[in-house]
Image 1: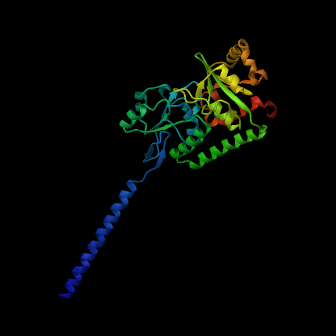
Image 2: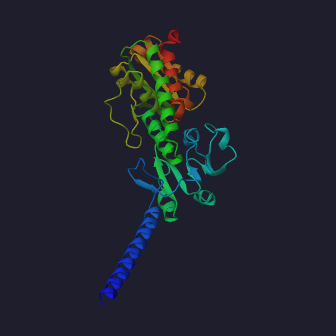
Image 3: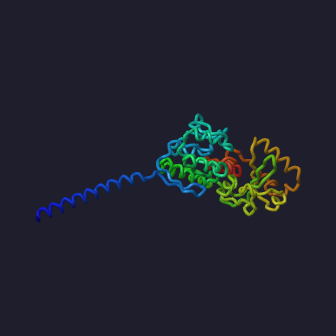
Amino acid sequence: MGDIRRLLFATVCVAFLLALSGCGSQQSVDNSSNQMFAKVQDDLGREVTLEKKPERIVVTSASFLEPLHEVGGDVVGRPDSKTKMPDYAKDKASVGKVYQIDVEKVLACEPDLVIINKGMNEKLVETLEASGIKTLVVDMKSYEDVKREVALFAQLTGEKEKGEALISSMDKKIQAVKEKIPQEKRRVAVIHSTNQGLTVQLSGSIAGSVAEMLGWENVAGDMTPLEKDPDSAPYSLETMVEKNPELLFVTSMGKLEEIKASMDATMAENPAWQSVEAVRQGKVFYLAQDLFLLSPGLHYPEAVEMMAKLVYPEAF
C-alpha cells in the first residue's frame, strides 16, 4: 500500500512540474510578443511606442529627408519641394505641397509611420491614428531641434551610433567657425522683409539662433512676439533706433539683389536710419533664404559660417 502511495505521489509531482514547465513556455511566448522596437517622445510631448522598425515612412517636410537618410532611413512618400530634395527622394511618391498635404496620397503610400512637421501639419494626426498609422510630430527649426531629431531618427532606424557621429561632426564644424572669429559680444538685429512689411526676428528664428550660437546678443531679445508668429516681433524704426544694433541682418524670400535694392531705398528715404550704428557703419548684411528662412538642417554649420564670414571676411 505504501508503494502505491509513493507511486501516486511521484506521478502527481511529475504532472505538477510538467504544468509549471508549460506555464513557463507560455510566459516566454507572451514576453516575446510584448517586445517593442523603440519607445520615443515627439515634440508634442507624446510617447509613441513602435512595435517594430518602421519600414514604410512618409514625411511631410522635405527638411526631414536628408537627416533621416544620413542615419540609414528611407521614405515611401514625401512632399513636393523645389529645394532640399536629396537625390534618393526625387522619385518617391508625392503627398502634396508641404502646406497642403493630401491625406489620401499619404494613405495610398501604406505607411507604418508618418513624420509630421510641427506647426504645420498636426491636423493630420487624428486622421492617421484613426487609420492605425503611427505618427510623430517633430520640429526642426533651431540647431538644438536638428540635433534632437537626428537622435530621434537614429532611434527609428536602429542606427544610434550614426546619429551620435553626425551630431558630433556638426558640433565640431560649428566650434571651428567660432574659433576663427574674435570672441567679442556684438549687438545684432535681424529684420525679415515681406510684401506685407517688416518684422523683427527673435532668438527662436533661424537667423536669431545662429547669431546667438556665435556668441552675439540679439537686441530684440526682450521684445513681445507676435501672436501668430512667436519667432517675430512688430517692427518700428523708432524701436530700431532705440535698440541701435551694430550689426543688422536682413532675411527675405526672393533674389538677394532685389531685396538689397529695396532695403537700401527704404533706408535712404528716412534719415532716421542713419542714426542706427549698423547702417552708419555699413554693417548691413543679407542672408540667403535656403539657409536662414528654411531650416538648414544638417547644413547648420554652413549657416553659422556664412553669418560669421559676412562680419569677419578676413578670418576666412
